[in-house]
Amino acid sequence: MSTLADSIEAAAAPDRLLDAPLDDLLAEYGVDLYDSSITERGFLGAFVEDRDGRRALSMPRGRSEFERDTVARMLLAEGLGLEAPPLPTPLATVRS
Image (cartoon, rainbow, N blue to C red; front, side, top):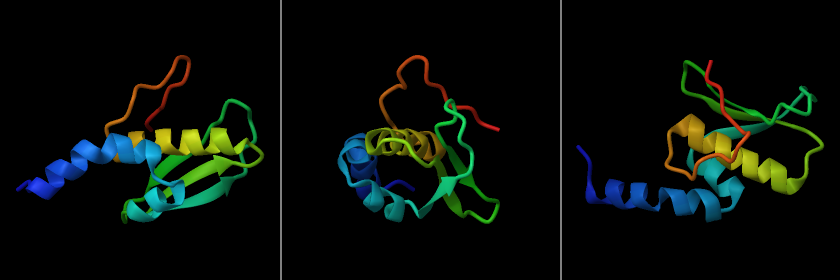
């Protein structure tokens, strides 16, 4: 059963996703951030949720802070099913 607090939190989610410090979001949603060994320019990162419920973001090293932060928020929104602005073309997320 949904509560008023759940409704308020859901309505605030897009703003929080874009404005909150990334470390706060990761802690709030129980997501660990790891450096990926994948260095291909087209790989922006991955959100993984294990069968036991553990969540992780795997992000390539060496990217700008802006790119890393932006992509992390995009992957969090997609992986957690949060409301967020649409991705700009040509970006896309792939589920597997």
